[in-house]
Length: 80
Image (cartoon, rainbow, N blue to C red; front, side, top):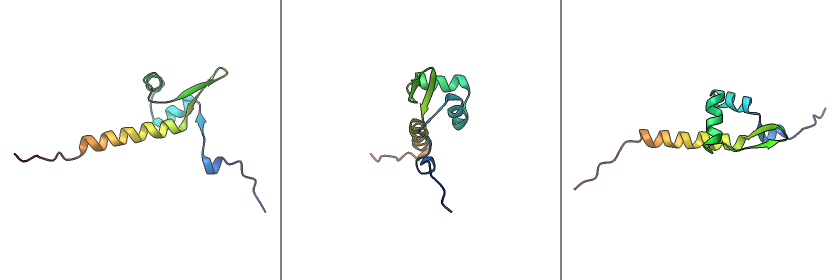
């Protein structure tokens, strides 16, 4: 028995609605739109429906993780 593939499983979702994006980011509606305004997330309008690019969510999370690692990394002392 074969199962038809839509390709979604291999690629994942490319875009999501804001409500879904905010759930993925565990943030409020206000914070989500702040991230859009600040250019932290990419989106576009499809008719009257806003779509958030999932790759931009992944990049945002990667930037935040890198910043957190940098902030908690031990500082090296320079000799005189």
